[in-house]
Image (cartoon, rainbow, N blue to C red):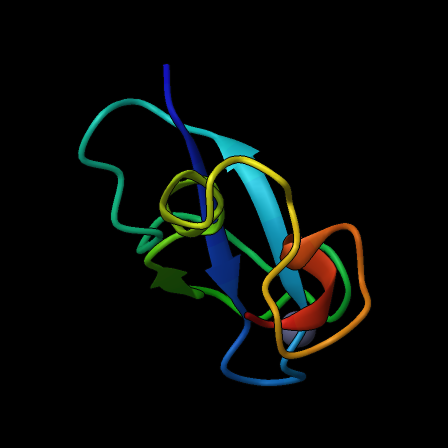
Length: 70
Ligand SMILES: [Zn+2]
C-alpha cells in the first residue's frame, strides 16, 4: 500500500498514513484534533523523488519534507 500524506483542514496538522490505493482521506480523522476528512497532499515522497531522493526540499533546512510543508 502507498503512504499518503494528509493535511487537516481544521488545525493544519500534516500526517502520513498507509492507505489503500485511491484513498481520498474522506474517511480519515486528524490524529491531533479529530476533525474528519483531511485533505490529501500530493505528495511527500513524489516530491522527494523529483528532488533526487535527498529528502531536501531546497526552501528550508529540514531533512524531512513531510514536516516542513514542501
Ligand atoms: Zn487537526
